[in-house]
Length: 316
Length: 144
Image (cartoon, rainbow over all chains, first blue to last red; front, side, top):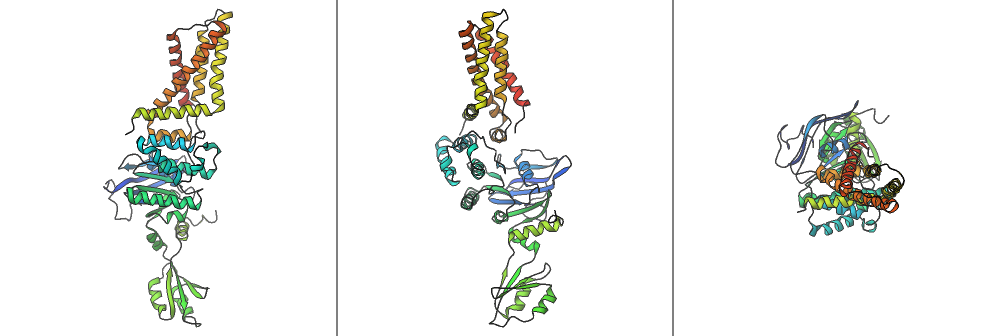
């Protein structure tokens, strides 16, 4: 999602047709705290972009700047198709209204015609499992249900750009899966652009591209496989031929600085960052019944990227 | 296509609902003109002071009640979608509606108690001043 190192985006200052939203060199300070520093991002038509980072990394600030709710100290934001719809990490709801009243109001404000409004409200309530509480005041709803109403007021929007700050936090797995399916449908069938700020790797994994933020700076960006390649290590699972274990364990370990462990009768080999997994697999395949590469979980990859840039984080 | 008038109407309904569902604000909105009516009526009967000043003070107090609870996160979110002009127009319309109702309660109770009479012009002027007070207070009072 960042401009640097990517050929998908135009040079600075040039807005490509397929780009829906583009920010260049955004910086934002609150007093002595630097919330964002020279962050450049762009999101394309028909794309789900993830902004991943730990708490305090600047995700919410970036969303607010992209939405135009705050002005950056430096840098610029361009939108190609109208105002984006924004959902906040902390719900911004009228406490004394009901979900039905809130959605009806937002449907009018988003310009949904009267003929389609009732259907849109009904579908959105149903999507987020809010049918049973549609006439209950928000002030009496649980935190999770409030989050669902917050998400509903954005998902009813026909806006081409959706900016979602921690949209899945507080949602149960069934609703989360349903919302993800809906978002992917909006992307592919309605060609929407969706930007999701999240601290959950399982949500980041479903994005087309991910920008990893830490302490207001971009650490890395790209597809899930690109981020995995940046961390560079993979585990190789070797199923031995019969009871005899594959030979040369000591030699491999010495040569490639690898660690090994036995798991369910297979040998799990952790590769070091500078080793070449494909070459290693070729080398051992003649001595094993089966060899497969096991990619690291995205959570581990993202944590490693953050840990590399901020070695003292774990201690804090 | 949704017209601006329809958006203003929807936002005005929101304002009225928010006012109506907050017990404290609702109580203040009713109590202020009632108290004003009683004082106004009493002044009309017993003192030589022009009771219209009392009317002004109490309507201005009522307008202050309208201004509370305006800077919430929800209001910011709604304003972001509707645009400032539409949002403010709806608020002025809702405030006018409530101020007219307050003025009606105040003058009716004052007339009942002390035979208080006020011209339509003075009443309209007082409502206008109250609206200005309310608008200024709305800008000054903090939200959540």
